[in-house]
Figure 1 (cartoon, one colour):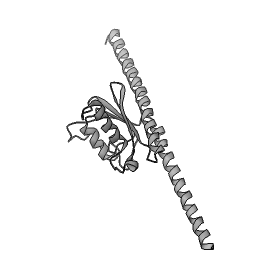
Figure 2 (spheres, rainbow, N blue to C red):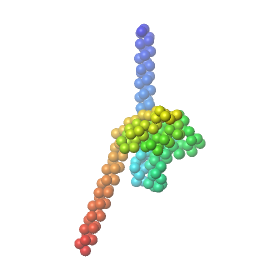
Figure 3 (spheres, rainbow, N blue to C red):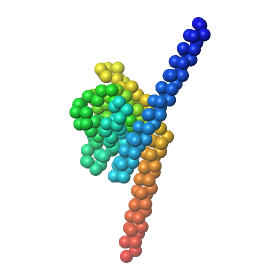
Length: 192
């Protein structure tokens, strides 16, 4: 191998690293936007999961969990985001797009991701109970399907996990306080 071959390899390695760094920065930026969507869900008393769909470097749509408010078990962040993107793009195929979501999609959402032909999925926290992008089952890359999604897991994982954990800690604390008040009220009624 000549010195020029060695230099070319080193430059290619630097380009690859620079491209990877740029992609990681972009992924973090869009994941932060998904986390802002998750905060909107939490404001409405929903589990804080958020999603944004990006095409050609631009956000096409965003969504957050709204199942309770809409009385719709399919109103997950990913589904809301995919529905909106289809309307914006006037197409049910979301080719060459990336979906950023704070929590690994469930089977329903993974199926919608495959059917809409989203190219890439980026998620923050793994879902140990219902994750369908590799943790429990891998629908988005299943070899039987004619479309497979590229997956990047663990982007802003700690922040996404903490957003969910803080919500559930607060909810448990609120339920405990309500239970304590109910017990106190019952004791007061018994005294009368």
